[in-house]
Image 1 (cartoon, rainbow, N blue to C red):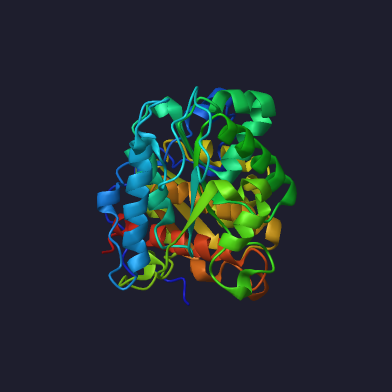
Image 2: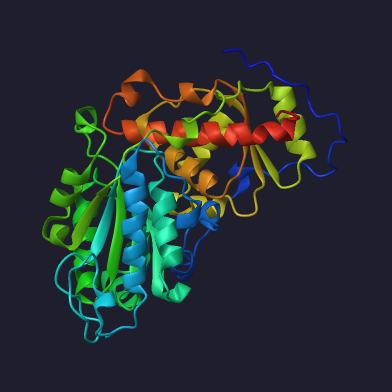
Amino acid sequence: MSSSSPSPAPSGPIADAAPLSLCAREPHVPADRLVAEMVPPPRFDAVRFSTYIPDPDQPSQAEAVRVLEGFAAGLGEPAGAGSGKRRLFGFGKAAKARKAPSGPRGVYLDGGYGVGKTHLLASLWHATEAEPGRKAFGTFVELTNLVGALGFQQTVQTLSGHRLLCIDEFELDDPGDTVLVSTLLGKLVDHGVALAATSNTLPGKLGEGRFAAADFLREIQGLSAHFRTLRIDGEDYRHRGLPEAPPPYSDDVVTKVAHATEGATLDAFPDLLEHLAKVHPSRYGALTDGIRAVCLTGVRPVPDQSTALRLVVLADRLYDREVPVLASGLPFDQLFSEEMLKGGYRKKYFRAISRLTALARDAGRLAGGE
């Protein structure tokens, strides 16, 4: 596909100040910020169960909403309450001193990418009647980063008073981290913390189906009895009735938009990839603080898997924060090689393509597009 602009460059005056640069940023994130930021990302601030629109052709979606609403209602009971309302999914007894009841104490949302699992997980967090400091929401990577920053025992102490811990994109492709987090979750369950999770798919299993429930339950070993699985069928909602991804713009258009847009960054794509290697992925959220648009020139295929996985994390953070991405060069569906798209991290790469495509579509308004 050509890198020529599908629309004329904006005609307004160029801003006096030069655009920002992601490559010039070297964020440092203190441990207390890691804890405070364990809330749904900005993109999911306003989501609720009522804003999730189930696909009428996929009854499992409406059923998931119904079950999760009941789960949230059970969590809203005061600690130690003896009523039946305290029971989760019809199991368990009243907790004493926040000890875990018997039976499932968690829920695992099982489905392909783009079916709204994160929307539902964030809705559960919002619907749970507890102070923000007593419920946590984060990705698996953010949780492992927290353990790295605080240490295992301090992390247990920090989270053990929580009513709910939501873990998005539970990583099944790193055995060491999986064991670490599984051990952590076991300690938290012992303290009465309810769990909710989504996950990716194990490498080598991606060609065998879209769903990862069996892999997830096996990898968390002794924790499997604490989870009820909710299967959510459906197609990637970002592709339901939406137009094709817009073609890339010219370098000239991207540069002019960057200068004309307050809070925009402008970087050459190869330079950004090099910079990401110097910043720990746990800081990619801080890397984008205050950014209102990302402008990239010279997008080209990523050269290796390590670089590709870092780009996936950045794409997730930009998507969470609804930061539009305007780019020249190749379209985003050509970022990853055919070998990568058939390999063990295939699901992550398709998620990144889907999210970057959505952000590129959002960026059309900056360049005068529709």
